[in-house]
Amino acid sequence: MNRRLILHIGGSKCGSSAIQNYLAANRDQLMKNGVLSPDVKLELEGPFKAQQIDFFQELKTQDDAADVLKQKFVRLSKAMDENAQHTLIISAENLSLIRNLPAVLAKESKSFFDEVGIIFYIRRQDDYLISAWQQWGLKTQPDFATYVKVSGLRMGDWCTLARPWEDAFGQKQMIVRPFRRDHLAGGDVVEDFLSVLNLSSDGCKPLGGLANRSFDEHLGDLAHRCQEVFDGPHDNKFYDVMIRTIGEASFKSRAGSHLLSLQERLDLLAEFEEGNEVLKQRYVPDLGDVPLFELPIDRDVVKSSAEEKLAAENALLTRAVYHLAQRVEALEKKKPTFTKNDSKDSERDRVRRSPWKYLSRR
Image (cartoon, rainbow, N blue to C red; front, side, top):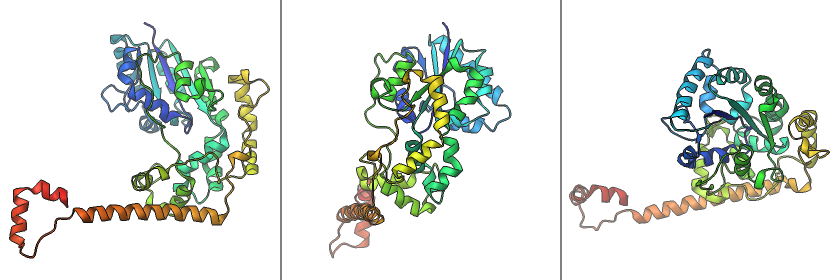
């Protein structure tokens, strides 16, 4: 049986989490359908999250990257043959940002796979950078404009990011998909991924909900005011706490953003206009005269005054305090009560007789 390798290289904030969650949730069924997703270390022992982000982040700094990949491919190709699997999917959205690995992957994969495909999802850069700011930038950078200059112009330059992969594997092996609902199969990135790669979904279960949801922008503004709560750009403990505290109010509930005006969006897209046109001509020629991405319009912008933004932040803080107060009151009601005749000895006796019950009450 011929072996096929699929490298899902991103981009980040372009539906990668949804694809990875689907692959992980349906791993056993996909294996029966002939598709193998390795574990987080490119092995077969687990944990199986259908992504290898940390593995490649570490591999890019290793001098023996080629030998490491060769050893991984030996084991994975052997497992594919033993289980009659025809496709191996490697998914790591940070791969699109790592310039030194495409050539290594191309060289080492030739000995093990009859076909290699690169799939790269790309998003309109203003929307992408707003989402990336919420996910990473606000935790370390002084403001959005600085983040765009320091990281955004590089991370959103899809044409430049695609070039090393095209050089290593060839244009015919590249699939570039605009992350826009009117271009995705079924308007869904998971369905598009399966359709474009001709992967069988027989027996697989659809995702139960949204993956990697965007946080409320006012919550992001609050987080940006207290950057010291973050250990780095990938630390999400603050958001995890807020989700547990205020629930759904933590997440974005409407389209649009107050982070950029319409003109600022248009100016930002002008930075990428030439590269976007090159990608359209090379990979999405069926768009014809239509641009790679539709231009932003008024509804993409949420117009909020400084006072309105502050009021929204205060509302989130009030909601958080209220929910915390409710929890404290609930815990107070669960505390054990003792009569005047209860002594310390009698309390100790109760703990000895039923320590777990006593502790759970407290």
